[in-house]
Length: 74
Image 1 (cartoon, one colour):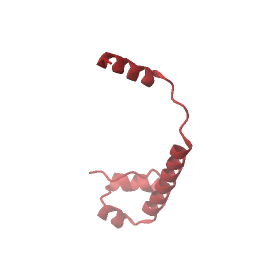
Image 2 (tube, helix red, strand yellow; image 1 turned 120 degrees about the horizontal axis):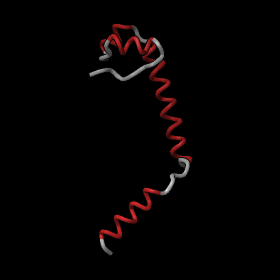
Image 3 (cartoon, rainbow, N blue to C red; image 1 turned 90 degrees about the vertical axis):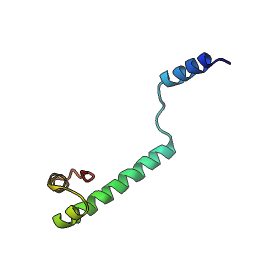
Image 4 (cartoon, one colour; image 1 turned 120 degrees about the vertical axis):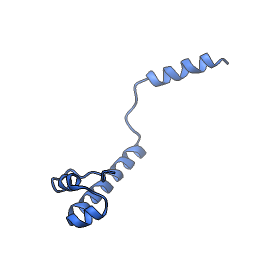
């Protein structure tokens, strides 16, 4: 089998429309969203000094206070 045949087979697979995510992937996504909500709640409960100690700058802290948490800027 030539590499040309393999390349065209890969292109055909990539061109097919994707099916909806599997049950396992949807469960993983739900758990990740749940974990992010918990992290967001934890960060919102922290004081400004604690957030600064964790590496967040003033803009990051303001975003957390407005309900738009983000990872610390580095």
